Amino acid sequence: METQSMAKDDKPGFCLRVDEPDTGDEYRMGSRGFFIGFANGYRVSVQFGKFNYCSARGEVSRKPFPKAQYEAWLQENCPDAEVAIWNPQGNLVPFKTSENSIPDDVRPYTDPETLVKILEWAASQPPMPPASAPTN
Image (spheres, rainbow, N blue to C red):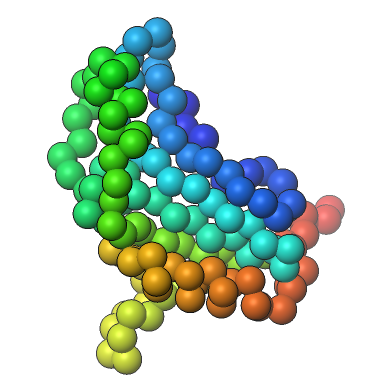
């Protein structure tokens, strides 16, 4: 099964993520969401599929589904999403959800209003140099 992921370049913009059919009419329901890349090099992942920490999370079956059922699943609404942030060097930015919480790589069950604040934060960060390739 092929899964689209973050764009391979550092250009700002949007990137869709969704599980692709394995072969022919075999569809699987697991990942769906998108990435947003900002000019400062930060990228935010917003995922709301059955594999993610969101209200759509559920039992994931590895068996294929008919195309019509898969397409209906792609259109289902989800009130929240799992969110992650990468800095320009490719490192996850940990979230701390409360004063006493342990930082985590993803923020689960994020509502749209909180997502907007996270996007504003990521967009407002000063640029950092991207990670450079090791030199020999």
